[in-house]
Image (cartoon, rainbow, N blue to C red; front, side):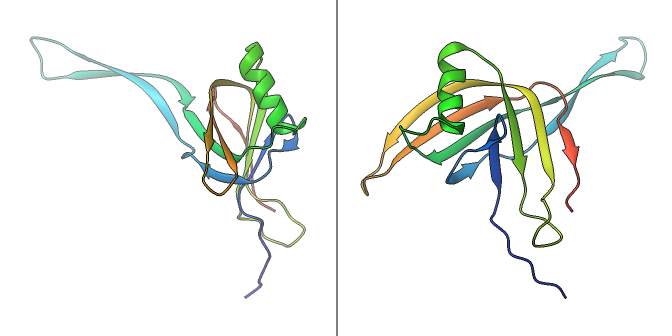
Length: 140
């Protein structure tokens, strides 16, 4: 059995690592459906719609001087600009490979709050809305 080193889940905003990720919501995809039931029959018609992905809460150690990914998240929230969101899982096959990647080109930040922790660190909580299907790249 091969042993490989992992760095855990990596989140990138506009191709830049976000830093110390403390928590990430579940990656979830769902399909819109609508059921129609006739009053005089037992049949049910189900109309299958488009696939959508959910929203993802992202919790990171806040760095107010970060002009990279955290700066892009703050700017995206304040200016209502979409960002590229990439989530890379820790399932890479080799030490120099990549984990499975989920990428959305036009993610929207709809919430930002800052928690003040007792140990001196501040925590930033972002909520990201992801439209449509992600591009999924298999682990290597």
